[in-house]
Image (tube, rainbow, N blue to C red; front, side):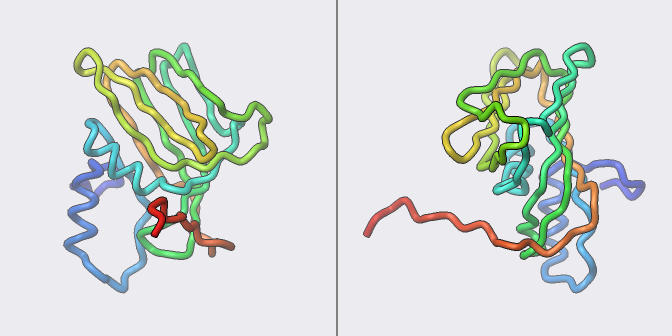
Length: 166
């Protein structure tokens, strides 16, 4: 664990949150690092129901970096949102499928997954409501999630329909 504001791995953050339990102290901004598929799953859970726009996705091809700015629903503190950024390093290619092209159209992130290829590389898949996805081909998994703002009350809490019919 780092005390100087450096990101810690997502699995270390999950362990800290579990150890702290129901603390009354304010929740510190998330700063998570993903270097493997397990870390990315924890970040995926933190980003479930995040909202962004196509214009908020920025790929810097020469720098091999992809940055996404989004409004994250704070599941860990309930009922609030926060502006956050997710950045991937060592990006080789970015491809989208069935994502809206209008720059200000809302995209709702459902989950992220990592599919390994030749070690340590792989493909990060960001899956959105409505069936669209963004595929990020990486030389190695090097991703950071950082909260950027103070939290504010969410107007609506996300809900998920039960897919199993009775």
